Image 1: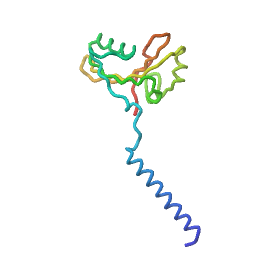
Image 2 (image 1 turned 135 degrees about the vertical axis):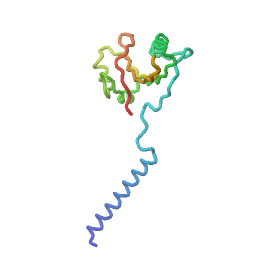
Image 3 (image 1 turned 90 degrees about the vertical axis):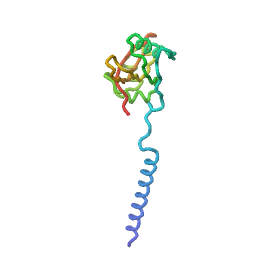
Length: 147
């Protein structure tokens, strides 16, 4: 075997070993990484729940008014990584700069996952994007989070 062929064979053996190590580590770590929304737990909103902010207070009041308690929610707050996973009717994979361009005077924003049973006892789950402009919170978009 000449010298050039030996170098090529050694190169392919090293590459094959590197690829095997990469896929072995990836398989042991569970494949794809966990999504940012997995770090948040569902909170049960019922009559005794004390809201942590004005948006949760609005969600609770709305659920009481419509007779939908208990409602389950995940409050992601201003997590930009979760915002990138949001697919709504107006936004898909947006970031904070896109929100600021779309809503002049944007003071704050928040993403909340809601899960409840409607009047027909059907399970409903949706993600709501709330924005604050001029001190008032309003729904900017609704949709879902992709994995």
